[in-house]
Each structure stands twice: as C-alpha cells, then as structure tokens.
Length: 274
Image 1 (spheres, rainbow, N blue to C red):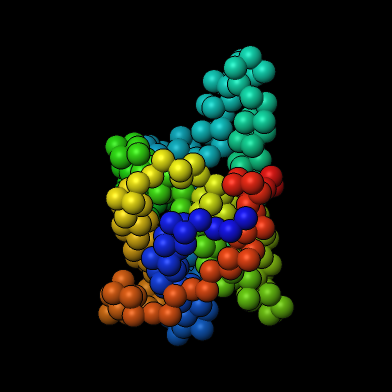
Image 2 (cartoon, rainbow, N blue to C red):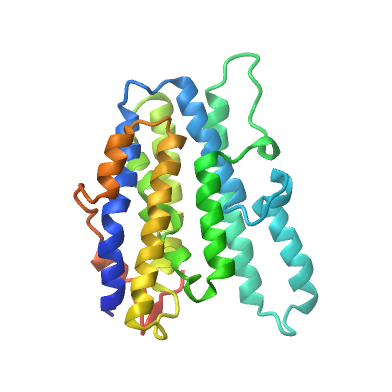
C-alpha cells in the first residue's frame, strides 16, 4: 500500500532536519573535539534517553525512568487483565520497556568500558537531563497534554529517523570503542526502525483536514529543530551554531526517505505486525 500523500508532505518537510541530525553525528566521529571525555558525555546522555525515554513530569530520575513508569502501569492494568484490559496491550508495553532497557544496557556497557582505574561506573538513577533535552521534552509534553488534537505529531518525530543509530552503525568493523558503538547502534537500529515506522505511518490520520496537516507539519518541524540543538549539545557541539542555523534554514540536502521499505510496513492501511 502506498504512503498517503499527506504523510509524504510531512516526510518532505522533515527530511532536511533529519539530515541535519545525521550530519551532527557523522561529523562528530572524525571531529578534532572528540576524545574519551566527549565519548563518555554523549554515551551518558544517551543512557538517560534510553532509561527515561521522555521525561513526562519533574522528579528524580528513579521516578521518571521507564521501569518505574512500567511498574505504575502494571499496578493499574494487571488487576483488569482480560477484563477490560487487552493482554496484547500489556505485552506490547512489556516489550517496549524491555527493548529500551536493553538499549540502555548496550550504551552503559560501552561507557563503563571507557573508564580508567578508580573512575565510577555509570549509575542509572544518577543520570541527569541536560538543558537542550529538557527543552525538547517540555515542548513534546506540552503538545501531548495541551494540544491533544495534534498529539500524534510527537510520534512522527520519534528517533529522528534513527539517524544516530544509522550513522553509528557505520562504525562497525572498526577496532576499539568505535566497533562497540557500531554494533550497539546496529542492534538499536534494528529494534527501532519498526517503532519509528509506527510513529510515521501507524497513527489514525483520516480525520485531519488540510489545515490540520499544515499544523502537524509545523509542530514536527519545531520538534526536529529542537532535536538538532539537543543532539549537537549531546555530542559536544561538533557543528558550529552557524551551521545549525543553515540547516534550520534548509541549506542541506534532505535525507533520502526509504519509501519502498516504509511501504512494506503498511498492510491494508495499518502497520504490519512486528
């Protein structure tokens, strides 16, 4: 089944900003700013993203982490299992948290492998959000809670077309930490591509008017602009602010969206089961 035309418009608008996020990561790997400390910094921050996901409310990391949220959700859902709560909904919830925690473990293990004698190992509940990630999370939370008609727009931007993982996977086969990063990113990419497709293609979109679609495009582009600042900060600013400004202005070759692969996820208007 072909990708709907309005979704194609959305992808066209998002593609330059996806390309910008890919450029940030790709530039970092060979940047003169890169060293053991900057690798530890981006890995630690990625561990936050894998462990917490999107911070939905203020509080200590242990309270906003996905495993803690899972525990609260299970306490609510399990008493109603098969009596108003679909067992498949619970399985999907468990699968999602399992995947994200696995990704946390992958990046945390690489972080720990970089430590010198006497340096402390990573501690999940001491991870902290950084200002640019906080701004992104707050904007997404605002859209989901206060502009509910367009809440689905946050799903379109999930993972930034997996650009961190696709660019990281290119490091496979290199010696040392690069090879470890490459293998981890390939694993996460394989897990996340289907989730990303769900965000891009799997939402109920039939009720959107042309004006609604224009608003969704504007919201997704704002989220992706915030992702550029988040990712550039995470990787110790491999791109200067002037280049980020150029990307935001559209001075970049858009990422080539794989429509053929995307269409394999569509079956009779819905995503194929993962």
